[in-house]
Image (tube, rainbow, N blue to C red; front, side, top):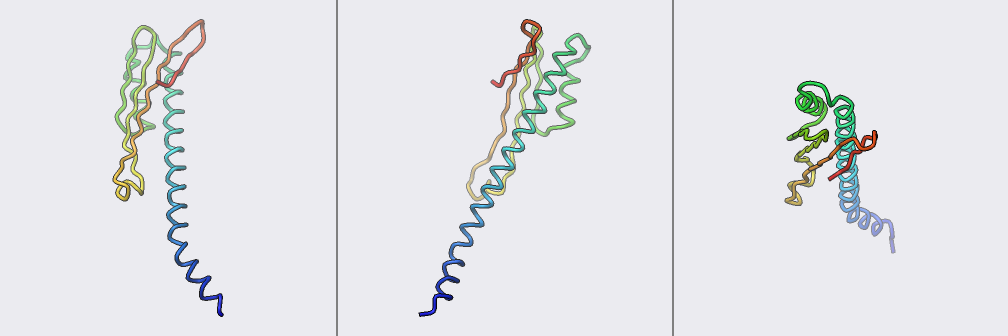
Length: 123
């Protein structure tokens, strides 16, 4: 018996599964990278805001900082020396059409000063 043909058939049958698996791993990694980028940008913006609470038009400045670096719907609220930032973004993935599922990024962070320490928490 010739095993070369059998090996080729098995390889051809498994190759599409491997390619889909690698594409899914790539997509999950890319989504994780994007979420991490958003989280770092939000935290840095809140730190800046907490260090400049006395500035005029701080909400507008923080919103412009986020819009310069991130996409999506961005809202910034400042109440009682606390800053709340919310960012919503529809993430376009390769598998959106295939899986009929949209991945959404929805991050909300609160920042305030307590005992002269900057506290930033994910909601």
